[in-house]
Image 1: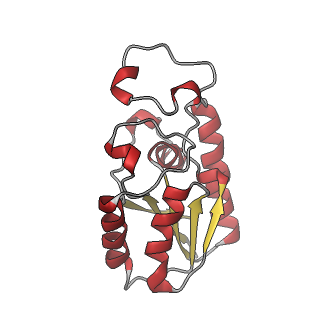
Image 2: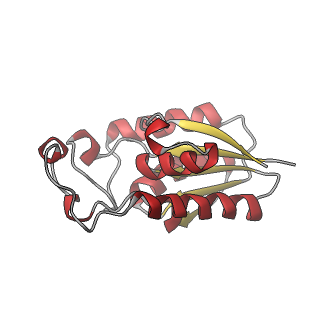
Image 3: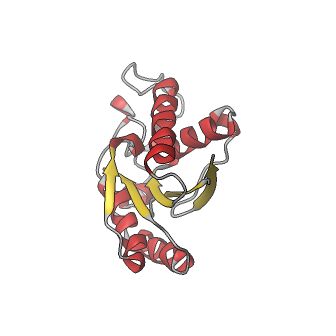
Length: 170
């Protein structure tokens, strides 16, 4: 019996709208992000969801709480779903970073892929045969899908805010 993973990205935040590199900062949904999370909740309201996981960063928890509410589920958090640690790029205006050399303290792609593998393993083992909603972030969600589909991250289409993708785990 397979496990259905509903992998979602958090709603839009104040810093998303301002084009600020958030990384592992907490973040706060803006009004549009709350509306996106509510629309996601409405689209999943008739689906049977057994568990709800989220990154331990506030913007993902806020989104997950809104989506989990109609299902009367608690949100369980995990650092495995945290966004990429952007090191010294954190808090910077994204367009200003275009031609800058990457700092040494940016989390590597391999480290994110390892977190993605661990997350998929956790879901497959702990939630076998269930439907699980997991709310993460743009880059870590790409890493998870990269591992799942066995494709390079650059081949995974970016997720928009409050988008959900279905992954069926064996």
